[in-house]
Image (tube, rainbow, N blue to C red; front, side, top):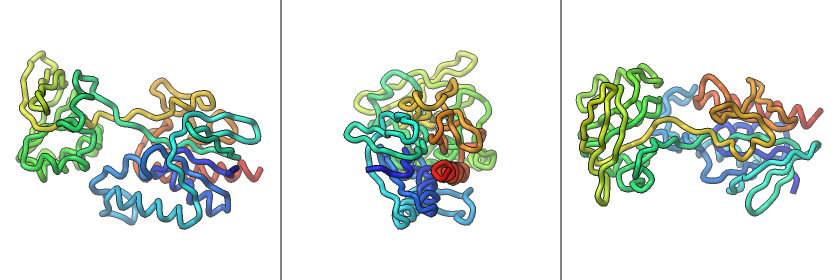
Length: 301
């Protein structure tokens, strides 16, 4: 079946694009490898989105999904493995099907970045986690650690400080890229300890995580006993399967301006997977609107 617009990724950018596409009376298919919502479903509380000052990430994503569905957008849960440019149309390929589109919007977002420490993969689910709001409750009143200096790391530490006995926040630098307001809140917490200019070098475990070994910039090594380690060291854009039709920078982000246009006519990008200064929920939604508007203009030209 041919669609006017096929959107790869059903996060905030992709679902916003679907809304704008349907309001322009275009047929829209969203292809998503996992679950709708993207990484925002892991947000315990969203406080920086206009109009909705107190809403969970899951609730926000569900409302967006229901809005797109109500307007007539179609969802299929399949992983896109490649896109072919056929000139006047595109082929969007999954392992089991090929979908024809007049225009494509790539809104795949990004995936979690790993620490790269031995036994990290082995201990996932046994003390190592990449989602504090998903797994934090398992470690209520226990000692835990958060690795990273990102906005997510600060938010994770704040969330865990409410339920854990103690939280170590470990960052390889002495400054954070997250919101200063969140950092100030953490400094005011009695059960949060900062280990700055420090890297995690070893995970100690028998059947589950028991402690972590950390090394400071001056070479000091210490062992910190923790029941869980929550990793929040950034994200990796999921653009690897589309390099044949879009340009990527040296970090793997899709090259496109604020108009969301790529080097291939009829192919657009939106959200955290593109080169941009600010990666926030509100900018993802804005990208979706811009990309869909551009796609509609392209289809009507």
